[in-house]
Amino acid sequence: MNGIAILIVIMLPILGGALLPLLDFDARKARMYYVMAIVLATSVLCLSLISGSEGTQFVLYHLTSTIDIAFRIDRFGSVFALLVSVLWPLSTLYAFEYMSHSHKRNRFFGFFTMSFGITLGVAFSGNLITMYLFYELLTLSTLPLITHDGSREAKVAGVKYLVYSIAGATAAFIGMIAVLTRGGSLEFNVIGLGSAVTEANRNFLDAAFLFMFFGFGVKAALFPLHGWLPTAGVAPTPVTALLHAVAVVKSGVFAIGRVVYYTYDAGYLAGSIVQKVALWFAAFTIVYGTVMAWKELHFKKRLAYSTVSNLSYILFAFLLATPQGLTAGLLHMIFHGLMKIALFFVAGAVMHQSGKTYVTELGGFAKAMPISFGVFTIASVALIGVPPLCGFLSKYAIAVAAVDEGSVSGYLGIAALLISAVFTSMYLLTIVVKAYFPGEGFDPASLKDVKEANWYMTLPLIALAVLMIVLGCLPGGLTQFIAGTLADAFPGL
Image (cartoon, rainbow, N blue to C red):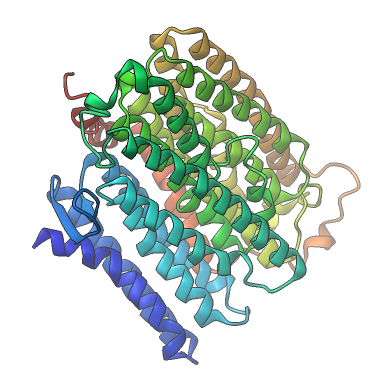
């Protein structure tokens, strides 16, 4: 029965979202009740699955004698599913108000809801083929969301997103087939490549890993494959928040984690040249993203470049191929999701309430929108890595994992983390300071028509602020849950 439940939790939002344009709701409240009922039901069912059904497997269809469309519940996928199932209802509530005056809302919420189920399909996939299928479906379901407003800029962003995604998918698929043809398994298991690793196969398998690393690295915004992400900021803020914090980019990071620990294995990668190459790219992306964020003046694009940097924090931790690296990477995957979606929600609230899109226009906004900028301050301080907020814990864990790993590449990553911390404080705190202390020449009358958004937008912000504080001060339950991944990824531990 639990196997069928996996299918239900994936298909409920997919089918519910697909039906929404056909139902053609005219009344805003009717659409809200319908969408929120599906999203909440999916989240509740998902949380119940990951809390009591670990180890469940379900084969939906046999493609060949060795390749199945299959699902499984393990701790690694459950961590991703936990993040998605907690943040999607908050994003949906926020979107109800943000999109209230937009056109084609039935179509928007249809694809928005479908993307929820598809992302859960990525989380609960039982092998690389199934994950790849849902990974590509996610591209198709989010493309109409990026191009939603129909402007030339949105269409250009959509084409760019599609081209990058197809190129990455092609590279990842080549890597997958290469592993399969050399005797490796596409199943997520604890023995990695097993007998496929021979001296004759080593170079071939190394090349296959790099194809998958850079292929899946497109959605993870790895330099130089990140160009689609800042451009995609033209999408409505509920979409960019999910792109940057939950669904698309985290699916890329998640896929690379699956390859590192469940297709290959930590023992294969540790100390190898491909590990060093991947670590160097991740370390460079950390610095590149944070410097570009500091230079960028567009509010959402600044946060987009911040995402580019922080995604590679997670990749760097995963690529250390150690128990500490795995747990630190998953911890930052959760915490970054909370922090970044809060930052984007504030940027969206500012745009919704005032039409302002540049950080140079935010003087005095803290007085006009005190809840939004209070949360923005908390999220900023957390992302910088100031204790006792959640960002400090995950960044500290990554640094400790790099020190314990002990290689030159590990120390290079620590240097990247320190540089990033400095630039992160500059590109976020300049916004905070300007919002609270606009300086001489500021005219309060310029904000007389700006006020806080309604509760549809402020309630998710408050909930995120509470989570950032509580999980920073009391992380024990979450860290224990994440530690459960070690039994699969390091069976001999």
